[in-house]
Structure formats: C-alpha cells, structure tokens
Amino acid sequence: MVPMLASLLSLIAMPTLAAPVSKAVSYEIGDQKFEGRLIYDNASKKLRPGLLMSPNWMGPTEAAFKQAQAIAGKDYVIFVADMYGAGARPKNSDEAGAASKLLYGDAVTMRARIEKALEVLKAQAGKAPIDLKRIGAIGFCFGGTNVLELARSGNDIAGVVSFHGGLSPAAGAASKTITARVLALHGADDPFVPAEQVAAFEQEMRDAKVDWELVKFGGAVHSFSDPDAHVVGKADYNPVVAQRAFRLMNDFFKELFAKK
Image (cartoon, rainbow, N blue to C red):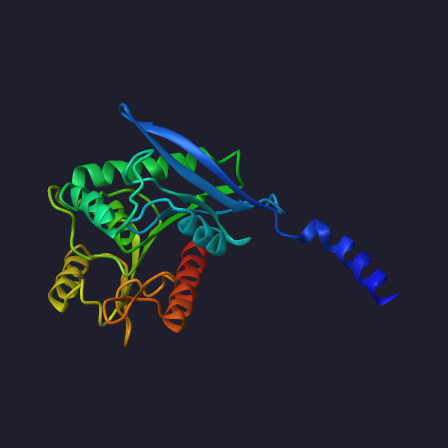
C-alpha cells in the first residue's frame, strides 16, 4: 500500500518537477562561428531574469553547463558564452592559458565577443522565458574579467558579478562610463590577483562613481567556486566560501531586479 501511495504522489507531483533545457546556440561575429548554450528550467513559463555566464578559461565545457544548470534552477535563464570560437576548446591549462592570454591583451576583441554573447542571450526572449527588463552577467576566473570588461564597455546591462576574476582592465581599450552595478567576489589570498591589483580596481570604481561592492573572503584563493580546482594555496575549491558567494550573488540580483 505504501509503495502504491508513493507512486501516486510522485505522479501528482510530476507537473512541478524540473524540466531542464540545455540547447546549443550558434552565432557569428564577422566570419567566425561561435557556439554557446542556453540553459533553463522549462517546468514553468514564468518570465525570469536572463543571465549571461562567461565560464573560466576552459571555455563552454560540460562542467560549465552543469554549473550553469545549478545556478539557473527555476530562478534564471542562463546563456553560457563562447569566448574562443566554435571548435576552439582548450584541452588543458596550457592551451587555456594561451587562448585566454590573447584576449587579456586585446580588450577590443574581448568586449566585442562578450557583448555579442549578450545580444544572443537577449535574442532568445520569446523562445525562452526571459524578462528583458532583468538582464545581468556572471563570470568565473577569466570569465570574471570578461563581465567586468562588459561593464567597462559602457553596456547598459543592469549588473555584473565576478567570481575570483582578474580585476585589471584588459589591454588596449579605455573604460567608458560604467552604468552597471558591480559585485566582485574575491579570494583574499588569491596569488593571481595581488593587493596592488585589488587597490587599483577599488580606485577605478571610486573614480568612475560606480555602484560597486568588493567582497574579500578570508582564507580563499583563486577558483574557490570551482569543484575541480585542487591546487592548494593557488587555485583551490572552498565549498563554504562558494556557498557564501552564490548567496551573495542571488541577493545582489534579487535587490537589483526588484527595482525593474
């Protein structure tokens, strides 16, 4: 009797179960092809905020898609950006370092690619339950730098969140008027983002009169939100800090989008 009741209850609950969508989306910048991924829960048709997600330097991998799905839940529609081009998928950290270095040294191209990815996200409205009045961006490591450059480009996106991203501007382009609200989540012991870089970022935000926040997590290093990072003292997953960081991200967007 009990198993039968459990089966019946599960059937009754089925309409509310998650219905995850993970769909490849192809686009072009000039003659170059790119392929990102749209991720959301289709169990509800209710409009929700759209988030552009720029992954770490490994690019749009299965791990990035899994992360995006966990963040999206029933709260967001997420588009995972492709910053390298279709077929350009680093196989290891050496290849990732070489690919990302090209963009760190070319702010014009970095901004063009992240802005195009944002356009692609917005273009999915009508196909996915995106509220175009509530659009933000998040990025991890290299992706954190990407979304900060999106803000520096003067784009009218509502807000950006950088998780353990580089805080220095990419080379080759001046910052424009930053209208986005900015949240930078930073490991206080991150060896790849020295104190001088943090101080310069703080001054940049002050000078630009940005609505900004910088949160430093004591004891955290680079990649603290990445479950696959295990280089002690350099790039290491910290589940407690990761949980705190994602809570801050959600609070940031909740407050930001409540005004929309």
